[in-house]
Length: 286
Figure 1 (spheres, helix red, strand yellow):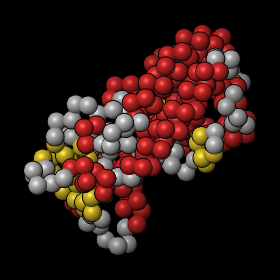
Figure 2 (figure 1 turned 90 degrees about the vertical axis):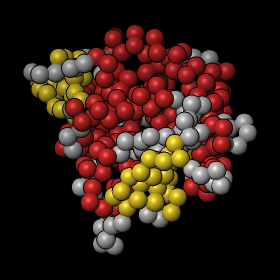
Figure 3 (figure 1 turned 120 degrees about the horizontal axis):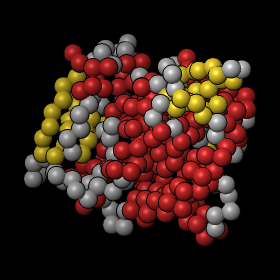
Figure 4 (figure 1 turned 45 degrees about the horizontal axis):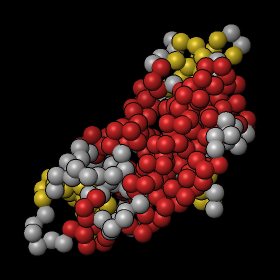
């Protein structure tokens, strides 16, 4: 489905300076930062071009991304005189609300796991490659990992019934909620199911880059900094299903990385809002 494509930053190029977010990822970060909380609001295309230009996205790339997202039902286009404005569709708003909850409410560190697991078993015809890809992508974003090829598992009680229904796969999927037997080594199961080394490396890399940013001071413009920050943090936490902290290796790097993220976010929140009021041309969404 479309919403996983919005949040899928797995194809980003990664350099020593961190992942290079795709224009669509930055576009969603822009609307999440400056439109989602404002309600029915749309933004002038020139303002969007200005904002994304601050993070290196060219005008043509912005315009083509806007058109593509309108065609996919993610943005609404609205003409005001000779100018074109863009606002969120209900679908895109739901996706951004989910991302907001993941970032600000749930956080990256799972200290309150209740010992339960959600198991999802599926069996699809060999010819259903697209359906299999879509299901796996949606499961990964929902926090699942492949325990076996057709058996996926996630910590806690995860409601994925709507995901399965939207994909039209209800007849091919079975979902269970359970706890592990005492004979199960949960730490080993986690390390066998998820690539902990890769997940940890993302956190370490994020923390290193943004700690350096804090040390360097706040000379950059806050809108651009915040767009990069949120896009990169989503890329970082995307691979982490909030695994139970007590079953992870000692000194798991999610906690310091999250503290760094929140420090930079707090540092840029007020200045970014003030700058947005001056720079962004908006109109009520009809």
